[in-house]
Every structure is written in structure tokens, then in C-alpha cells.
Image 1: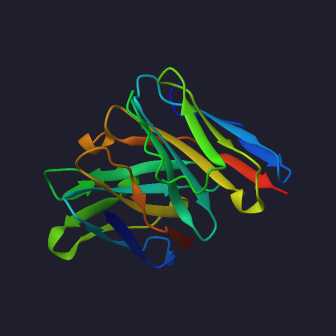
Image 2: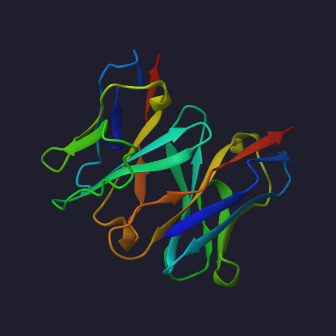
Length: 114
Length: 116
């Protein structure tokens, strides 16, 4: 079984400031980890994913995340927030074996102020 | 089409009526998923189809919910005798082969269901 915890249902930053969205997971086997973004009234778009290999993963729109096995974390960061980054962000986990599906966190709404 | 296509995009129905939601996955994708997104519940897994294997129905909330996938492509999610708590966005997704092999899961725009 697997689960995901996202700390903070809302995160507010100023434009140009660092974005840090936290995600911790639990998994019985080595997981695959994902971040998805959802803009208002739209579906989910993949930002980045970790499957194997390099633990620092770069995604679209300047976002990156680092898989830290010892901390069971996969936090999402962006050095400088832009107004267009305002959206809801979902962390998700999938087992890397068998027929597995995505288990999502509750989501974090990112608010960006001028 | 280039992406996962869902219809209708919006549906308002009366309590007690049946509804059907359709999903057309990305061409060639053998895996298809249904999720439900509602306020306070986040994203809930409903059902998963993988090729010709028996679907994983473990997420369906009640026997009023069912889904089928014809010819390994288009899928229909049916909700019978709708209740107000069924109001949510129903998201369909697909992936190339088994997602646990690292394949990306792509989501559609969702079907917004309102039960009045």
C-alpha cells in the first residue's frame, strides 16, 4: 500500500520568491513519484516524475524535485515564482511493480502575489 | 486526437437519474483509469483497465457505479440512481502499457457532474 502527505493546503509566495511545496510518501516497495499541476477548470498536467536514476528531477516551467529516500520526501521547488504558477499542485505515488495506479495527495494550492 | 478526450464536459442531472460519462483515451494506450475529484476528498481512484485483463474495480464507491471498456479503447463510466454526493469532476486518464513500468499517465479535462 502507498500514501502521500502534502503539507499545507495553501502556500502563498510573492512573485520572484522561492516556491517550496512539500510531499512525503509511504510505500511498501520502491515507488515512482510524480508532481501534477491543475490550472482552474482544467485537467491534470504532468510537471515531472521520478522513476529510477538521478534523484534530482527537472520538469517543465522551471520546476524540479528531489527524491530523498532517507526522508521519504519528494519536495517540489522553483527558484523564482511567476504569476502564471498559481494553480493547484498534486504529489502522487505509484508502486513500481505489478498493476499499480496513482495515489494522490490532497493537493496544495499555490497563490502568487505581485 | 492528441490527448484524452472526455464527454460531456459538463452535466447537470436530477437526483435519481442515471448518467453516462465517456472517455476516449490516447490512441495506442492500453491502460485506462477513472478518478473522481471532489471538494474535501481530493482525487480518488475509481477503476483501472489494463489491456484485456480484468479491471481493478477496487475504488468504485458503491454498486451504483460501473464502467466498461469496449474494444480496448473507449470507456464509459455509468452512475445509476445519482445522488447529490456524486457531484464531482470525473477524470479519465490513459497510459501506454503498464504505468508501473514508468509510463506517464495522461489526464483528460474531466467531466463536471452536478446532481440537483
